Image 1 (cartoon, rainbow, N blue to C red):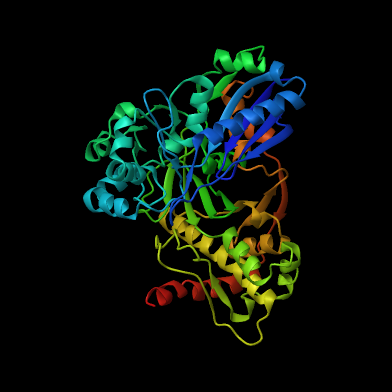
Image 2 (tube, rainbow, N blue to C red):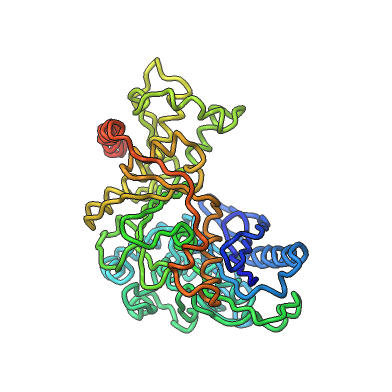
Length: 490
């Protein structure tokens, strides 16, 4: 039976997920690598560490799966978005990759929006924020001109690994959409943006659909692993796009809530015409001919981690959250805003900071813990509200993944706050599942996205909104949205 391999290049580790053609997970292998923060606000990694991790994963798969070399037919990738990889004419890494969570580029973002903001929004459907790739390029141009003069290839992280396997320079539409260099509607690099910011189109890679084959594994790597047949390498997709595919988010009315360090509220879009005016991100999907919109909470799971480590370090998460079900909706008036690292959606405010408000003498640890979960969920609801108001859509189903899918009280809270059925996955492996699905589609193991979802995506528990709770949370949310404007003034 044929195998496909999905490789997820994350911020902290690289994970390989091996599936058979029936959509059964055979094994998962991962390797960690370091994150460098040489100055406040900087976040960098060495792309060579990603390469070493990928080969370590492939080595382990060959050693532990007896027919891996004989049965593997396709590889694809998901990867951290936006992070800038620069190669010279010999394909050597010029400087450490500047990552998506690096915030050194505030001045460059202001420059972009002042000189070209309206045009940028019209072409890319997004505004310039520190996470995107274009501001990082401008920073290198302005602060490391010698390095910029050496640049012959600009890639994103997963594309560096595709090049390692195939010697091809590629980028898929979903990742290109996060560079601020891509014409989302016409599926091409934007001449207007490249001219405005003095970037040569020749340094940019060839564009592909996510499931499109870039090339075969090179002869040297095929020989190293003893592959007995040609192994196709697909272009892959951005991590959020792959996570959406891996959760089956390809139709109207279904969305995804992902709570990791940050949080995402995501929905597929039939076209890229909805004008969110920069309040939400709008990108090309990894599924063909679709887009997706998403709002981002910068500190979602990170807020819960911070709260536990600061106030309940000795407790496990299960113990900390064990009592929240006994606390009334709204935490008896206590409100938490998860702005501990600034906030993205809907405020795009890097300076705002978090708060507990309306603290009362009767509030104990469980009140605060419940308020943190409610605040994180309200922050994601902000994105749902924008989508509902901008595109007149109602959400009937939301797939919950990540930390928010680990606690039954929190899952019911999500159903009540979003007023939608919450669904969990039987096997939650994140963007790597979507990457494996792209490998299956591109290598012909399945014939369509729909068949792939049927085989690879298995749903588990369902949580229905409770009408009484929905009404109570509506009132609490109305109080929550008043906190930001009150805080901003002080």
